[in-house]
Length: 383
Ligand SMILES: Cc1ncc(COP(=O)(O)O)c(C=O)c1O
Image 1 (cartoon, rainbow, N blue to C red):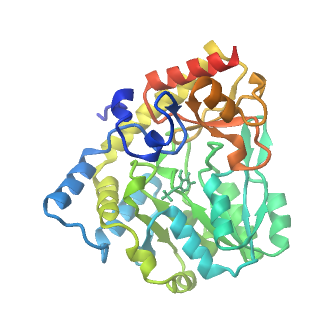
Image 2: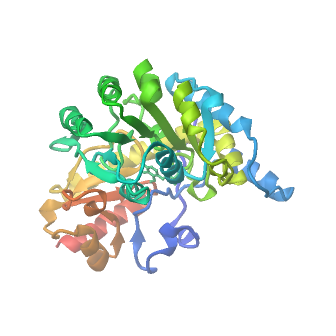
């Protein structure tokens, strides 16, 4: 049986070189940046060690085992069997989405997103000089959903690409099949291409059902492109390797017109690590989900016992909690006040869209001790 994956201690984490642990001063407890504080899976370490030991540190070229391992992984998780001849590598999800958009649109074309959404999506749209169209998620208390009527109105104005975040960071929602199917129908009707960023999908908790966009329907396969990576799930963001996937011959040809450099600008270490992750690290993934499940529930308990005025909906996936701290009256930038007064770093709601100022995004991919200490710091700031 899989065992929980245990996070490193704070002392060990402070020796890390990644941005999460280098960016802030030493007395700050850092919980922004979507990295987890766990050891990576043993099969990944072994694959990387073998390459280091044999000085195998060249460029990435043909790497069919990566595509096969993703195919098997997605088949086991979601019953989706993507075609390996329609997969390509890219440096990371960000580069993959940007390069796909460069092929699909001209500067000035409209690209749609749904706020509050992963902050870099806003920057990717700026990078390709597109016109950004925001159709906010519909919100009922802390339940969020795609606003299909508003999306249709926006599509009607000539949107070329819809950047879908599925499942949705930071609100923690997995979209249901019916919604995605209706979205695909709308996109086809208005000739919109949907780029589905599914990087968080394998971290969906058991009581929810994630549906890969390209599995939804024939229509979805006609207008959809998936960009994903092992980087979030297996904590490999620094190793740089993502996948761009189509399931339709026309889109395949279109996307294959990308410069060949897009594929080899991914890293050989990233491809090997992602392969070991998706083909040999299932037990680790099960263990991480056990840990994250306890952590997401711990947050609910800490809120109840320490600061019940914070509003929180237990997320459907991953390690990011979207907390409404309006009642703490920390102003329009609560993250700034928490950093200044509590020496706690979290992401401010303003990063994800203009109307989420009372929120913070809290990374719970860490130990119960660190999560508890973070809540003590919030409490300190509050009183
Ligand atoms: C929705 C989403 N897409 C992409 C990324 C980043 O992926 P990559 O590092 O592969 O670009 C993140 C990171 O948090 C994310 O939340």
